[in-house]
Image (cartoon, rainbow, N blue to C red):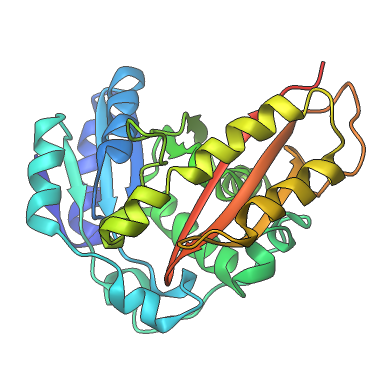
Length: 283
């Protein structure tokens, strides 16, 4: 595995590979890698001939500075994991390499996707995501980029970014990778204490019950039920739950037969924020 820390060296390497007609798969990450990330890399290896992974903890997408400071950094372990799944190229830039001393977000219009769910609770988050993903796409110029569906809103926003900026990359959404007890894999999970870790699978259990209820009950009734489930939970605090249209991400009240829906949830375990979602069927 080749490791690059500068844009120039990475571009020089990739330009040679592109001349050889290699197809470039790209998996952007913030490090603290786990099996979920590795599943994306394995998918990229199936679909492209050269896989590039970036590790960059992007400061502009954190609305709280303490979250940025607490974000786990495990570079040595990350490189071992990347080598174990056959990653070809690792891009590990500094903040200055990406932002050239001007650490501010570009402002984006994602046609309202940015104002739903996460956007309501994390000011400026998706401007930060858009800024870094656009920068990384311009550096790597991949044929295909791979993202997990755990961050489904982010996935939809990146698809919108590519469309509006006319970027020449195909975005591939990959299934949520879960622990055996159902908890969606996340770098934040390493920060959970034993009590919180035992409690956390309750999130996915609740989503599975929502999927069952969605066949016969209204979105409004299900939302009230979920809120009630978390009201007296000793270790978990619900931030939001919503059933939304997959395309617009807007909360629904009534179901329409020609639309696809998904349930989204954000929960705090102490100060650790966990998100998840599940596809819903209604016919």
